[in-house]
Length: 359
Image (cartoon, rainbow, N blue to C red; front, side, top):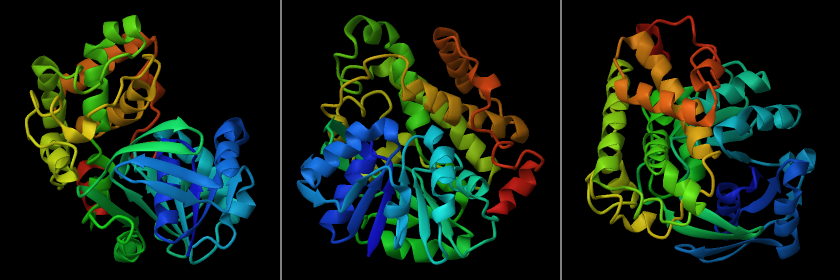
């Protein structure tokens, strides 16, 4: 079996190595501006993993030749932040062939739908099956090109859904060997909204903004950064997201509960669980506030939740406050940018009841 990995960040490289270690033929694509990453992988002949997973996962090719990467691929994994989905979809759409499966990992709020829209694939089309996962299966950091430290590979709490939903079991069968803890989602809304990065990252970042600026991120993001007060803000945002999920007919697990399920946390507590979480140990804070923890998790995640909440009539004072403060300190209008909304996914004209029954 051959897999094409689109994305050479920590997540993409961890995915490439993990599939290679499970016997897949692996090729990695990224754009020329990330040539340092792909050249490093090519020089090593693959990606070496340290931490919870150890070993060198061999890669047959790493570079910016999309045709070469996509040729003969049974599975295409798009592994990158929310703002990379459209770019990857545009770059690979001319190389998609019937029978291939594309997985956007993670969904980052509708990534699967956005991929289909950008690639010109009708939602009901199943010649090319498109799916998405609820979250990235790893907590990983890139040490250098071709070398990734894996703090945690999720043992559960990872969901997959396909578009159309009848193909979900087919996609699950492709992924279950590499991700034995993966589960099928009953609704695409679950994979869109169960990712808790937008719940955690902005809250911790904003309440540690001065420390990040003073130290350049020289502290442990969870162990040092999540005190009881920070945990309370995470909880407030999480509760509002869960309420939005209820309006869509889905059950979103609280972040503390999903954290235990995934293996990040031992203690299901907002005030203490993050500090003591084995899966978060040793993860340093970002070096700057201009980072995906705000630009992606607020601009794409919280803005998306807020958009659905408004349509559903759910009040979200905590989410609103985080978006407002993040916008002020970053001098960006995250709401006004509308990077990811129902409208960008082609769903802006739907009522909440129509959205509820779509997927």
